[in-house]
Image (cartoon, rainbow, N blue to C red; front, side, top):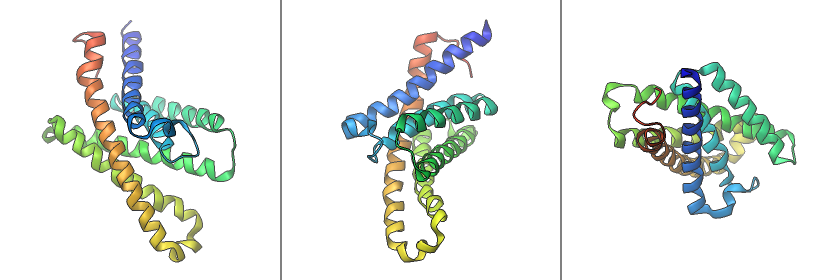
Length: 194
C-alpha cells in the first residue's frame, strides 16, 4: 500500500514538474516547443528529462531513474521519426547532461544552507545554464578537427545555450517548488513521500 502511494505521488510529481516547464516554455515559444527541428524543442525534451530525473533521484532510486531515462530516450527517438547518426548523439548528450545537472542540483539543495526557495531556484538556474552551455563543448568533441577553425561559432553557441539553460533552470526551479510545496501536498494532503 505504501509503495502504491509513493508511486502515485512520484507520477504526479513527474507530470507536474515536466508540465510546468513545458507550459512556461510554450507561453514564450508557442508551438515551436513541440517541433523537433526547432531549438525550443529542447524545453520539451529537457522538461521530461528533468521530471523523470528529479522524481527518481530525489528518492535515491538511481537504477530505476536510469531505466526510465533509457526508456525516455528510446521513446524520443521513435517520436522524432527521421533518424540519422547525429540525432542519437545529440539527444543522448542532452538527456545525459541534463540528468547530471539535476543530480548536482539535488546534492546542492540537500545542504542546510539551501533551505530557502529563492536560493534553490537561483541554484537551478545557474546549474542548468552552465551544464547546458557545456553540452556544446561535449557535442563538438565529436569533431575535434573542426573545433579550432570554428572557435568563435562554438563560443557563440555556448553563450546561447547558457541563456537557454538558465531559462530552463529557472523553469525547473519554479516547477519543483510549485510541485513540492503546492501541487503534491494539495493532491495528497500533508503526507508527502520524500
